[in-house]
Image 1 (cartoon, helix red, strand yellow):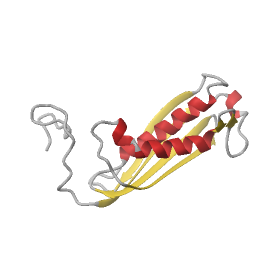
Image 2: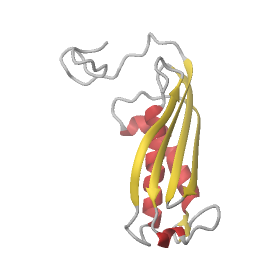
Image 3: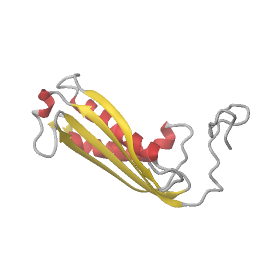
Image 4: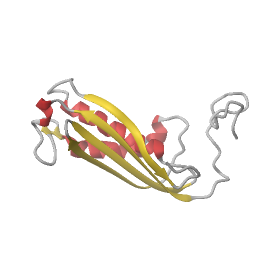
Length: 157
């Protein structure tokens, strides 16, 4: 149900409500999100070809695990997200120029999409990179987090 303003997450009294998806059909759904983290030279100099190593450990490996864990915990962090059984979650991180590029792909078979799970996974992986590298400098910048694509719903992107 959509209220007068066109929001599906507000009821007739304009109070928050989780969208009822019980009438929808299960479909295979996928979402891809990306976060970019500017890394100053002092951090990029630590790159060993596949990862950045700090006293806290392997940065990209830890960020990948954090991103996957975050995608699984999305409904605990964002109040109106449905709890979904995720079929898969892949987080990839690589250097591109001065940036670490984090890409999170999430898949499910269900009644609602996994955009928020992909965005959460990419965001938390980016925050983990920041956390693990902040001993070098606080000059890092999480420049953008965006949805790259989503499929399987009524409006693919």
